[in-house]
Image (cartoon, rainbow, N blue to C red):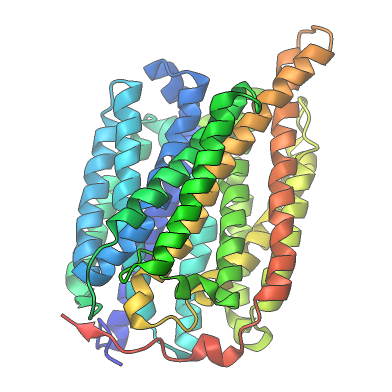
Length: 483
């Protein structure tokens, strides 16, 4: 098999470039979390708009990823990487210069759209650069660790930038990062693309985008009541549109998502785990940030530092796990990991207004970090095991798409449950000086419990479905045509 970099040293430099791109895309899902209170005051955003700053990025990213994967396959992975990186930087600059809510939301949606082109190109290049052997496992371990730790890094970096610069720099920081990645791509990346049928499935694209958007809108409308006509209507429409999408994909000659990619038991299980993990992680971390700043009164920097232990644990565990993964396989960590992560989220549900960080938060973050590392390190390798080169981009996109779609749906769902819990608490408890904060904490606790429940579901899925042989994870990914 040919690879985009012929020199062994260049392969590892290329991994650094791809890891930088992955970090930028992932941390942008959370870096604005800590900046949201300041941005809300500065731009006069409502609480609903504040949540949409997070949700619209994940929604645009997740819903367009499959199309982005196909574009990367057909148009060229290096070309897609470069255009995605440049577009992401421009969208970030627009967001950083936003003067109103509409401009910020538009920029976040644009970021998500270009990330949908950038991310699958990156992962496809990684797949064909490290086609097999122990080096492949190490490369995917690095990439997976960034996927798990990038969200937490975003919280820390967001705190630093908000504290010492302004919330705008949580977006503007992407410009120099993108410039560095572009230079690296010029030096170490060569073009590669799929061959054969290169037509795009536009009906499939419209159906999946509309279906996912309807689901997210339905969950977001649930804040005002689950029985509302518009809530039920959007949710039902989303399910129907996605069902039609599956039917269309089974019949067209050039499907956006070839069903052969997901009907494989092992890969299908990995995609389900990815969706649940994305929902629990992105949704849960948002409310943890609010707890730090709104209830405990932490500054943005203190909030970022408070999340640092989880990042450190993920990085340490990822390093250790990458060394032993070839010996123990993927089933054990991907079964135990969700249980540990769920335990960490459940522990966080016992937070109080008084809030002793060392007792009430730190143990939960450590458990969550160990669990997430156990899931993310093997996840992408499993999800791409045995995928043909022609489907490398779309399969790579499906991995990232499931995380982002899970995150957007999870954020909308948890926000609805959080809002309902606050209303219920205030209605059932007498007024007091701390009633509002206690209601907030009750809402956060409900969100953490729901996130833990979703995470726990991933454990039996991993145990019963994810059973690839070690040979499946080490075998060659297939040949690639170089352009």
